[in-house]
Image 1 (cartoon, rainbow, N blue to C red):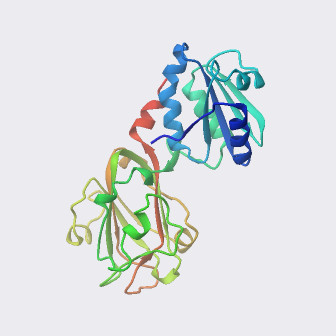
Image 2: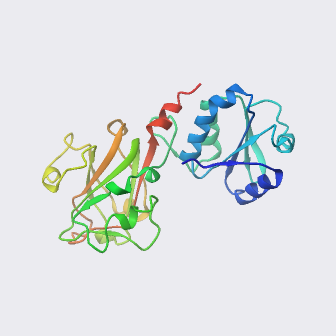
Image 3: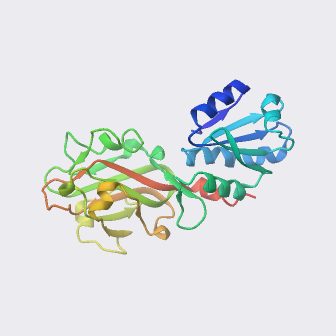
Length: 283
């Protein structure tokens, strides 16, 4: 699924700019006869998936000449960057690195990538919800109550452990991804996760496989501070170990209060799809 907005008239554009005036809007001015326009189009479409806080629009200069005239577009492709209805930057030509650089410049809410190439976005839209599993979850408060909508949970729903404080949850994706960081939030401090272990591409593990396992048998072991889970701060992972992830398993070994129940209010996974990362090499 892409998030491109095709503009067919000046009123449509004005409506978009009014709705998105607090954020960045990018307009791709293109033409059917323009070869470089067709070359950059798949990359631009993928950007619309990865930078959801940015509005990505497209204008065919031959079909909607009035919009092109407003911004004095004479060469294709031209990318116009707009904030608060004011042009803040302009890029002529099909340069993927330049596009990425300008997005990073004008949309600073994106999380900069650890490798310095690209930015990290939520990967929850790529979840395979049929493969969401969690061992020792409460029947009333399972994993799908907070991840079933494929976005970070902001409702009153939460994941709760059942027999003891441990949880073993597996998140599977519908394509390979590169994971840069995680977000785990807990509204009840004493029940918030403390020690966790991360495994990749091992969807069928049980508690007996992870309770005593340490690195490098597991990809990473982390101890989370109270403020990280209370404020939902990103938890950076060792990026080199999370380059091609089809499934991510999170073993919660303990919580901060030593309670019998562990509670997680929301989970997010930040990174990029492999397809997006490969596009960063586009020239």
